[in-house]
Image 1 (cartoon, rainbow, N blue to C red):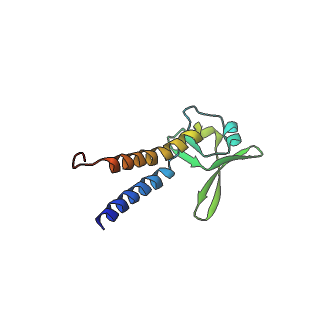
Image 2 (cartoon, rainbow, N blue to C red; image 1 turned 120 degrees about the vertical axis):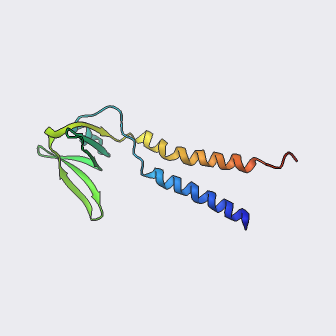
Length: 124
């Protein structure tokens, strides 16, 4: 029973870390234009001139108006974007986001394997 409890705690901890890192999003270092953000069709973070940060699932363009789409509990919500109040726009870095998600799980798996191969009682 004691060994089952140890493995259960380890498994729960690994699943907890994996769940927490699933929501991590890494944005590109270089800012992009609004047109490029529309073409990317990915998560976008907009820094406004007043210091406020707006995050959208994606940016769309209808006529000359740019809109950001947010997901809420009731579904997608379209928010108009004021072009004059934008300081910089950054889009999601897909490769880095995947790497950040997988890295903790791989590290915890490696630690679990290394820990299971160690014996603290000496050599047999």
